[in-house]
Image (cartoon, rainbow, N blue to C red; front, side, top):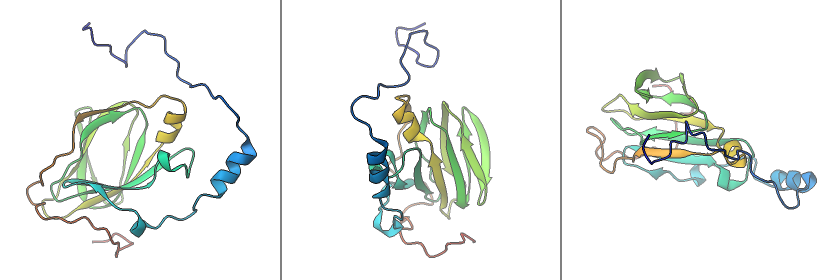
Length: 185
């Protein structure tokens, strides 16, 4: 074995649940949660990244709006792909529109609008838009905050997001304003 520690197969003793220290009052926490917004407007949340994969984070751990999930929209430009990465938390991708595929631990899984793609714990994966002229979108639900709370979050980026547009995606502008809520072609 190399001198680099392998965290997936290590025999090293580790603590998986962090210490909960300091005052914790359920009434105070419930009040804090109930004071959070109940509706977030997409038009008030911008997209990040690009030019092949764009993200709009509706709810994420740093917001403090929820305790157990992270929700974001992924949009893949024509011919676009995400970074190749892995994380311990599961994720469900509800495909809103488009056609594409996933590669999970070297195995390809095709998807199209209306499908659900499940990324299992500890899976190295990447998302691809199969179309060279139409974008694809997915609503992503993750259990990431639960893993953060338990101090079990581990993420690793194998390759970063491309900084150049994919062939067919040159000049692509992310759909920031929604006008087709049924996601029909």
